[in-house]
Amino acid sequence: MACDIAFAEVKMGSIHEPTTGRAAPAPPPRIGVLALQGSFALHAAALRRLGIEAVEVRRAPALEGLDGLIIPGGESSTMLKFLLEEDLFDPLIAFHRDGGAFYGTCAGAILLARTVENPAQESLGLLDVEIQRNGYGRQLESHVGACSCSALGEPDLSLVMIRGPVISSAGPGVEVLAKWRGAPAFVREGRVLATTFHPELTDDTRIHAYFLEVATEARQATGATLGGTNSR
Amino acid sequence: MSTEFRLKTGLADMLKGGAIMDVTDADQARIAEDAGAVSVMALERVPADIRRDGGVARMSSPEKIREIIEAVSIPVMAKVRIGHFVEAQILQEMGVDFVDESEVLTPADEENHIDKHAFEVPFVCGCRNLGEALRRIGEGAALIRTKGEAGSGNIVEAVRHLRQIGNELRRLTILTDDELMSAAKELRAPYEIVRMVARDGRLPVPNFAAGGVATPADAALCMQLGAESVFVGSGIFKSTDPEQRAKAIVKAVTHYRDPAMLVEVSMGLGEPMRGLDIATMPEEELLQTRGN
Image (cartoon, rainbow over all chains, first blue to last red; front, side, top):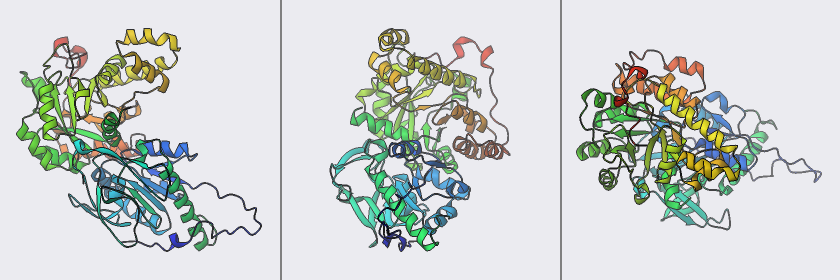
């Protein structure tokens, strides 16, 4: 499992410490949305509301130059087949190793997890959690809820769970940012974020904005280690 | 949009960019899942066989549906006859994820469709034009698909229906507010939904294609014409190599704008299902005219 969290320990703004007090604002991060299947267009629309035009990623070369990637909701088993059969699995792990940020919703969280159950399936292993597919049951158990999230402040997050997964355990390096029915629902490990619910189905863009911050931090950390360039 | 309805369309949103495959038993369901289908549709016979054998086509048996639900981890849809709300109650009780009130089965009610608001399970319905789509949405459908001509292996009707809906949608967006009541009257559709569609320039629910998809190119054609996913009926299991064809159609839906990928996935698939010329078919053999 590649869980290199060293970059994320560098706090935002600590890399290009303004020396004159008039440093140019950081350019917006370049974000891709994995567009194999699922709610990728809704994620792109959420980013557009934040002024970011996302790149649709269907093949590995499209990852070039990106700072972060969203893996959308959808069917994880379908997306996994594309990752394995179309040479995307290793490039995604390399993207993380080279400093790229990730945000997975629902199926995306399943693909990022260390261990997947119900049934077991392969995963990228970039997030130290064990996750149960369809953890609440079938569509009739799909539901909405609300929970507080101190990282995002008021108002509460509204949670839309569509045949959602349940995170059954999280490693010590995983920060739990929001919980639902006792289980982690919004987690962060370094530059990897995941939600078991679908903010892309709501008008609330705070989690997307939070991800843009994480991706910006990740870029600045990478830029520092690569001698100030953003190239990957 | 109500919370309940958001949960229904939310599942349809998660199925976008995918292929949903007709299956009659657990073995076919596993083949579909292994090929990367986002969902399977349970039915008693595929449309080409319904067409060939005739008789009354009904909901699949509960045993078959149970077997399919247990065989796969992806969402399971199942078909009910138009207006047969008790078949729908049975499917909801069994935990089916989506119900297709389908013209492919023999209609149970020649006047009325099911009141889909009365159910927790989401419904998909077929349509040939915007008015039909908006009537089904008015009844509570959370997903719309073209009817095409099921079991024909001929994409011409799905193309006609996709173009018709797109054309009528675009025309609606240029009308002024005081012209919308008259438009609703012509469309025979609920005024509030007509107003919403005119404002947004799109349907309030996802719009998939169905009816006659036999090749990866057919699937990509539907996607380029604006469908957000593709249902494949007889096209998979009436071809000579269902496994390969299923995989190829899944890939064609994702890479629908990438001709090089379409070349690659279209190779080595064996023979597609044999198609029918719809222009020479007698009117009474058409499935698309059922329910309106």
